[in-house]
Image (cartoon, rainbow, N blue to C red; front, side):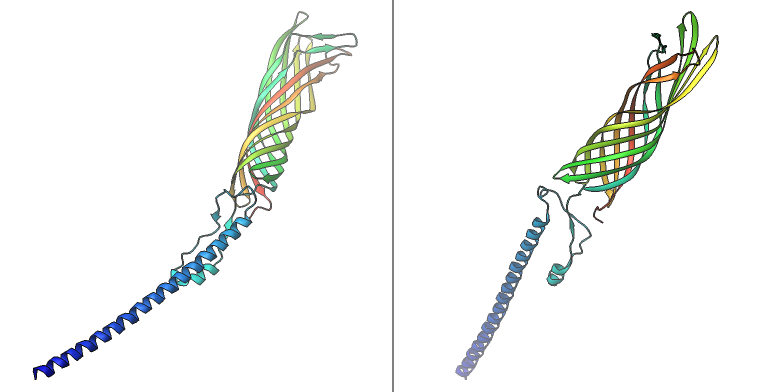
Amino acid sequence: MKTRILMAATTLVGALTTTAAQSSAATLDDVIARLDSLQRDNTAMRREIASLRAQQRVAVPPGRESAVRRPAADVTPVSHGDRSAALSAPVRYLGPYDWSGFHAGVHLGYGWGRDDWGPMTFETSFRETPLENGARHDLSGWLGGVQVGLDYQTGRLVLGAGASLFYAGLQGKSRTALDFGGLTIDERAQTNIDWLATVTGRAGVALDNVLLYGKGGIAAAGVDYKWRIDAPGGSFYDRVNEDRFGWIVGAGVELAIWRNWSFALEYNYVDLGTGEVVVDSGQVATNALITHDIKTNLHLAKVGLNYRFGAPE
């Protein structure tokens, strides 16, 4: 009886051991198969990522490879189980900001400077008689207008040309007492600059969406001169409008703030040179001219807003 019980127990244990071994083998095969599948998926994903990176490098212009690329839109995280949806979803990248193209805009600023009226000169058909006096006064006022320009970028270098036209309310005046042949004469001089126009070239360095630049070119201005003298023999006055020409240099920084829009801060120095202005042609003395050599220098500080055509939306 004991022998039969022992044999039955041995048979049962063997059956259980065989079943457990078969179950373990099946489980291990399944795990290995899953690992192989994950490895194949991982290899395929690496190849696709490498292909996308290669395409991205080809799309970058020469000399711009080191620039940081920014996602154009938020990227929604996708679970590992939905790999096909992640690869098919369009992910758009923007390269560095490109300053090439045409732009137009408006500006507002403030100007200040100096107007030096040289010694008064009496010119007759016989001689010129200079007087040792000079009327000097400061100029200041607001200005505002429009500008246009065209830029071309290669690497970090930006080259361009532009023009500006603006209304200017710069003015200044002075009063000078002088002695003329024993007579005391009171001279009053006033300058109003009504408009300014410039044509310039510029060169700058682009730091992605920030542009640092210098500029230079020619300048023109419409100037209104008012002159008056009060003498024992009476008062005389005159008014002269002249177009003055000179040169301009400046520097600034421009920031691309949103899509096609950019914001600029700029300083300019304008030299309108020295020109002879006839302030009286015969009122004081018959067949005589009263002239001044007038030199004008200006400083302009401006802020501007530009719309850049063709910039990426």
